[in-house]
Image 1 (cartoon, rainbow, N blue to C red):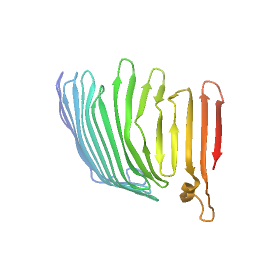
Image 2 (image 1 turned 120 degrees about the horizontal axis):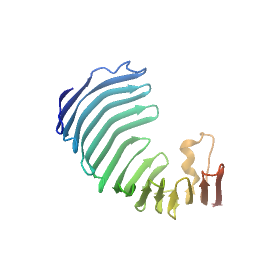
Image 3 (image 1 turned 90 degrees about the vertical axis):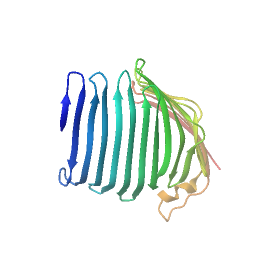
Image 4 (image 1 turned 60 degrees about the vertical axis):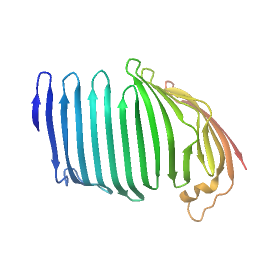
Length: 250
């Protein structure tokens, strides 16, 4: 580590050089190198990071490479960008070739993109939003979202409106539907979830054959299933949870 910390100006560099993480913790292995810089002033600091880790191992989990690049500034509001790239995540029954996360913007306007390539799950999502520090409230939209899963592809048919109020410890999730070639899962009304709340969920034309990957070879399921669920909860009252489910088979 080298640099200067003045009364106002910041100029500090921290070098990361860990050529062997083996045995730092039981089951841990790999290498890590990088540089973290602190610039700007005490009132408006800037953090720049460029870190790469290779050959990471933790028990049965292995990761070929992780690259993190960031440039974060803090003035009257936090702003900047962060790029994360993870290659070759392997563990029993999981093989993820690539995960990328890209975030940029400021508190008032920011966006995030997540991409996953691999098995058994791959897909993507976009998240955009804004944060009001005074009101402690974040509003955003989840869009361009789809995933490939063992039971086929799932995709959003419309953007999801999100509204998190930290003072109330509540989040609102707008109406939306997840579409699959063999099923449709819909939330027809806004869910206002917190210590208490209520959720309505509709399951349409669910083909029981979708369960085949999770069932023994000697077991078969067939038929089309449709139903509705109405769930309410209140954690202020012990055991105060109730639900109704109305199935309609075909």
